[in-house]
Length: 352
Image (cartoon, rainbow, N blue to C red; front, side, top):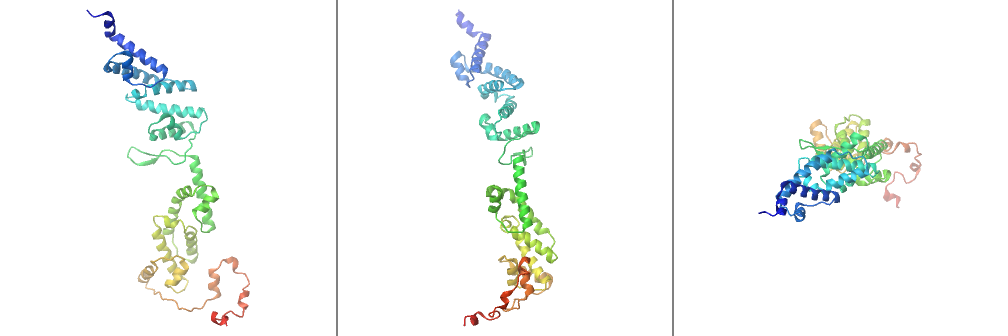
């Protein structure tokens, strides 16, 4: 005959109530656990405890999905219950949905506490995949109109595996606009510059300026390759843009093409202006020591039928040629140095 105590423990309802009471106690204490710990307390086998726990967690998941959380106390209770049973919840069909709600509740609580909203702040509390955190933050921004603080653009994979932007940031946009505006201003000035100059001007790091200016300079390279140049004014404008960004253009994908076009446009400019097309002249005017100058001159000769020729060692330098090389601000200065008695004499004669 089975003792009454053993019969009582063998009762399915008694087993269920005993295990649920232990689960309620652990929920109240808010300590994460595994089934082995419940086995040690209740004395039941793993299979029995696992079955009761699964039903308990299903009910808890439904409750967590429906619970309204509007203040700090409710948030802390919800998070405590979720964390206590998180290992079991993640294995249920409601696991992904509950994790996203966990992330959203953390975002809303951080906002209620006026904490700086960043993906790192959310990740420190929730853990999990950053892609999901980024997506939930973007959805929260779109639904509420609030803004997350970002230091880089967030990207994710769409359903086709393509990398797409999943978030925008006003601070990033403002930084991009300020750097673009400064690049536009430098282009209007026509003065060559380096990224370090913009860094000192705007207060951003050189790496930041480089990242934001890369697309700007790449677009300029495309423009320099496609802009028609058929007059002196057009050539000077083209050269002005090239010289302004001469330190950045070599870093673009089409830098080789831009340098080749610079050489070709200089050759055409010399011919159009009636000057001698020669290697030394192309080198002097382009101000760029391109090893392909001779090759480009030969190509120009073959395509146009014109003939390049070397310059004489001595050539006449006219005042018009001098004025063509100096800035207009110096055109009206008195050329008093021409009155020097040593003008026109060889340096060897001057030393005598």
